[in-house]
Image 1 (cartoon, rainbow over the protein chains, first blue to last red):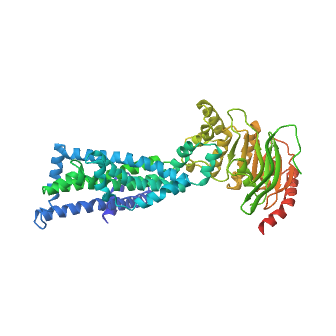
Image 2 (image 1 turned 180 degrees about the vertical axis):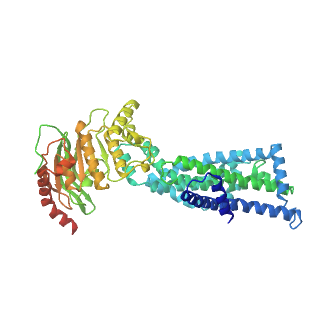
Image 3 (image 1 turned 90 degrees about the vertical axis):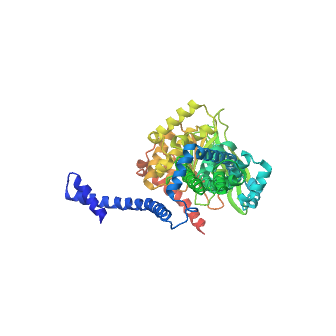
Length: 284
Length: 260
């Protein structure tokens, strides 16, 4: 009803053309407003939850020691941002994730594609991957700390191990689904091994590799949080853990909120990267 | 029958070629000489091993016995380029990059690549589409890119494997005419595989008809229609009809045999 009212109001504001034009106009505005209503609803539901939470905390329905009011959390968030502490933790965590992605992702692409191109490589490496893939990566943490110590390397390696598997497995699958005719074309134009990799296998497998990268982003976030909780003196995971140790509950929430925000930002970024990288595909 | 020995040297020579896949004999003792500048077509029922022969020449299959030979090119130039059946241009490359592929793979100098690609995109009417990706083109346009890619590579001989079979009739007719037009420029030696008798007669100087599996030489005929040819005018030419009819007379038993 309100949508319709608005629609009529907007079309009335414009200089009236013909009746037919007006009818079309109203229909279009109605559809738009339905979409806008949906968007409002999806923004509204988290805001509504925050509001209910705030009120429940203010009026003592929930224990603010465990569930501090959103306004309190936002206050701490601002404070931590101003002091630079939050930025510092976020920066170091992002740096570890980035290095981990490079350390795990580059070999994953090379090994994954080689496995896709060459049967012997597949026979050689596939059993190793199948055997190690099911190990929960977080269970490797003590071992990694033992080998690489408490420094930066152990965090980077944890992320690298986590991102390696989805990217390598997807790269292999990506090569295997390339239409064999493209490999024939490469052969008939005398493409070298390196050229076949560079001009056919890699670009052909890229849509699958990007799926692997997106999956890896989630895994990397989990692993960096866990790793920093145990063996670090910095980073967003460390911040959450140390806040728990001193019972600074609002700070814990700030950490959780920040990590969720990083996840959101990374997903968005990767989707844009994907869109650019595989712009040759008809449906991206 | 074998091809008459002409004055010009043979660019493609096939001697007693046999190709077996396990127990199946795909090609059985085929010998052909294709002279320089000849547009040579092979027609035969499906499964007669004609594509296999082309793939052997293109280095994509090995021979069981016999010999195939393509004349050595001048230094720095490739022996052959292939045009494939169906979509074979890389969807992840622009039209320009696809057309430049062969030249880049043989590390041609940058200015040669640029000159050759722009010339062939122009001749195939693709200049406007140089920056587009294949999914933005129609099937006919994509096959033009495939033709440009092969010609731009400037090979000694061209190997074409039913390049127009996936196109609708109108596009096929248009592309046949365009192929004739661009081929006339320097009359490279062509080996053209097709299952269409009309297409073979329209395009070729010589046609080899193959038997159904196992694929043997049934006959080789000289088309003898003068060039340049007009694809539409040809259909109105009584000689064209006679040649097509003549080939069909020989082919119909083979097609029947291939069905059982």
